[in-house]
Image (cartoon, rainbow, N blue to C red; front, side, top):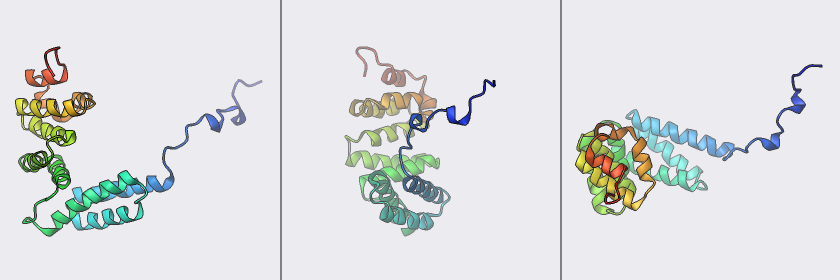
Length: 186
């Protein structure tokens, strides 16, 4: 008799986890990633069409549709030309993150400064600005923004601990005090 298990003795299907989302959602995520790729390739008009289609066709997926609408604003600004600046805090934030990802740190900081000015209690905006400041090597400024972001959303402490954007300032005392606070620290 063989010691190998037959296919019928294999793990039953009931023991396998069910997929979190259906095929429609997975297709929508792939379309979103493709549109994002077009935007990063410098093709905002093509990305705009894709994001608009996503927002219209997948409005039942609230998170995905909302993110698509946010990127619609970014694409519209980029296709309108350099004279148009983002007007909403969300557009400023998204544009700032995109500029940071493209290595345009000064531009990113200007956008994020405006977003934080409009929404000073938005942890994500403070975190994004802290990461740009860290990439620029401004440890104290990065630590200040990061401290405020963590006060608003404690989960960001762990995220920052593992975020490569903070590599330049990781060994600075001001950063360490935020990430590993003493009883009198953050």
